[in-house]
Image (cartoon, rainbow, N blue to C red; front, side, top):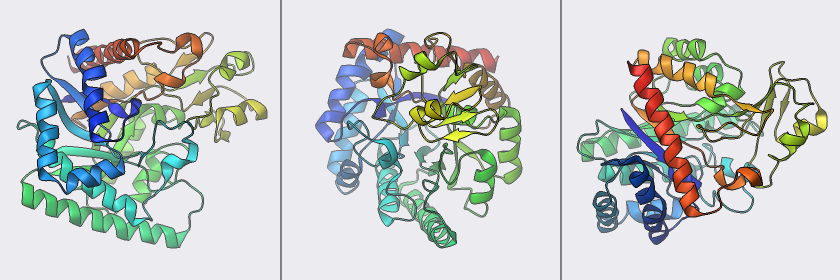
Length: 365
């Protein structure tokens, strides 16, 4: 099994910026963990992915930069297209979607890069991506266009594997508010895809926000024949009594990312401030990736119990071998919880990875 952390938490979009990430964060995280090798779930913005895909020498240079620092990459995050740590992202992260050929080109470029980054011992690579599109606008015409693009994606991945000898699979990540929000929708929308090349990225914060039971969700995907290509080891924010916790919840409202909110009773809001204004009945779960190892501000909690149940089932059933810790919200936590320095960010990510590794070891026994 491979465990990594997703580098979309760091704002860098060109080659030199990516390498600076390695020295500023990854090297410090590896020291904290006293690890021989540190896994990265690398995020590459679309322009850099295109540059690397067409420049073999630059790919080789990136591989050397990783190797000399004791870093390895088996998975890429292909959900954000570019500018993910911009001042405002919100709905922008869902575009271009899978009705747009730019999304196909970007994803195939990532696959071309990944085959040259994979360590020799890795059986395959993985790329996570958005679950087709944001839910609006969506109709049969857009669905047909997306399905045709997925066929092209599978064919392109097959060609890359044939030329390189290294298979790469693409994983669609159900997310609140999207065409595919939960595993039932994934089973329906992805029926008929080439499951040798395509499957699901199971984000455990998103699973919790959809109020899905992990055992049932995993059984549903297995019954549909959809492989779990990748798991995002993440936890969402939970409010048992959102009225009592309203003042604390307001501290999590921020302008950069969308924080979709879902109640146990089926109420839905596309952002946390909307949920607070509407005051629908609790409990709530909020799409806010909170640090795995630390409790949120009381009286809020996290969905780590859902994460634990899911990991137990995933490991017992040998569903997946790529696990990626994706807490990209360190910079927008309430001020009293927010890291002050790069060193603090590195220490926090290291603590998350240690938590995830401990959990995996515990559940594997």
